[in-house]
Image: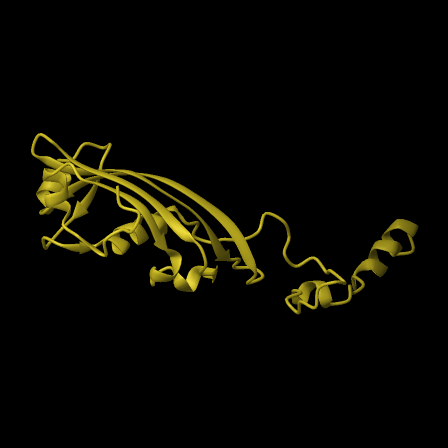
Length: 175
């Protein structure tokens, strides 16, 4: 068991050797999800097992973390727990990918090596919401909060309906 994970891995070699990778990767090292994060502190716990089932090299395991995403409504932080089960079939061609059972997602490898952080980041991106936002209404006016993100529709005074006079006339019968 490694506590410090390698930066570059050889997935096919690890599958042949029935390798196991356990450890943590810093969230700061994941560049593609950086713009989605409110805070890049923390780490991702990685448990990956490489093996072969017949001719199919595979990766199974789990990644776990709590990310601080940026709420797309108020741009403040929102905690998002990730506990993702990984079941990948390592393939070299699209034909091999099409022959995978539906239990496995394809991991297309074009070279012998790959960055482990790319694999982890791909799985994290798949588990994130398309539009992260708080469960509650982010724009509710809070006197303790100097947040200027109050929507314009709440700031506008309510206007009287111009047809309310006709409604009154209709009810009194003075038409």
